[in-house]
Each structure stands twice: as structure tokens, then as C-alpha cells.
Image 1 (cartoon, rainbow, N blue to C red):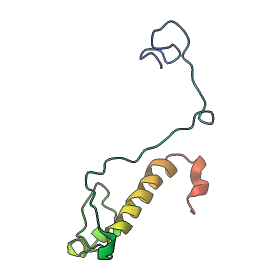
Image 2 (spheres, rainbow, N blue to C red; image 1 turned 135 degrees about the vertical axis):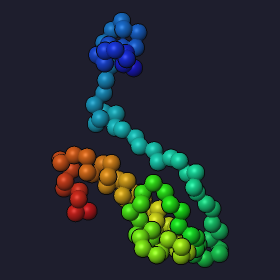
Image 3 (cartoon, rainbow, N blue to C red; image 1 turned 45 degrees about the vertical axis):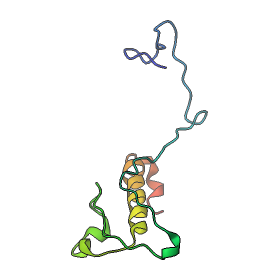
Length: 102
């Protein structure tokens, strides 16, 4: 752990802080906050729900008059996940521009 004043010293300020490269200890990302989750019975067929407006207002289902029509919620979830990856990981650095066509 680093000391809050000096990032080169350990938390006790008695020695150097140890660090690892991202290749030695890769970063793990966890997707959390399932507060708006719903459970569906697969035997009931394709679920149909009114869209729940989240923080991302660019979802195609929310554009125009489609907000008050029932639709399958799973494509919206996939859109949220893909848009989050695009905004927070791919558009942050110019070096990752090779991912944009994907």
C-alpha cells in the first residue's frame, strides 16, 4: 500500500512502496450495481417490458415514441455494456483507436 502523502513510500512511511506492472498483476474490472435487475422465467418465452431509463440516454429504444412500448430488455442491456466499454475504455486514449472498427 502507498502512503497518502508520498506514493513512493509504504503506508507506514518506513520504506519504499512495492508496485507491480499491469502485465505482472493485471487489473480486474467488476460490473456491479444490479439494482434495476429483473428475473425472467425462460419457459415463458421472450420477455417484454417497458424500458427502464438508466443513466445512458442514447439507447435506441428510448429515442422517439418508442419509450412507452414494450420490448425485449436484453438488447438494451447489451447496448449499455457496449456503450460503457466504448466511452470509458476505448475513447479515453488515442492508442486504442485500432479497436474502434470492432
